[in-house]
Image (cartoon, rainbow, N blue to C red; front, side, top):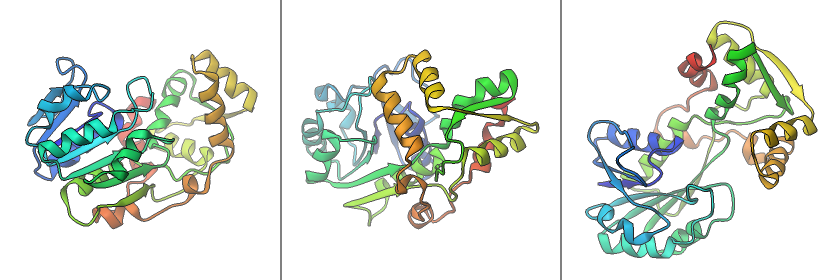
Length: 270
């Protein structure tokens, strides 16, 4: 039995699906089990990583545990030691952590703990392109800054697959896996791929840094997040634009391409 935290999230859903495909029993953790919907065979359980005591029943019988490092408000979780103590008590043997992109007390606690751990560090999600869907449907246009920047963006399903393998199979304890897609693409190339997938042209308008910041403010983002996002877009670090073989090496199957993702999500852009 594996307990998956963040099971309603972009990656958590994929972890659940991948574990099911491998014939594993899955327990999905959510703050409100009455509102959650999961595939047949998944046991939905209620609990909150901010309140470790709420996890005790959910951990009963679990041998694997997948954790996220932030709460619903994207605040770093400080409850790692308490969660791990309960996990050890319940008989959990393996724990995976989805790296959240910054310093994480929970991740630090997992690395320092006694359980077999694996940290998974994905680069940009292919699913981030869905932020363009509304404008593409409205006027067939993508508006974005730094359109020549490279990103080795990764399919969320491949992140879930790497996590599932680390929970199920031996040989991944103490590993930190940076997970990328099979190509590094510019925004120009991504928009062209989306246009081909949906079957009609998409215009690309390059925004200035100031215009991009103004748009994020209008969407309600905080200044700190805006500054961080623009810096990542403008100065994408090497790990964000360097293709690695993590997905095929860990899962035994090729990493999915952006064209694969675009075909899967083409209806969202029509």
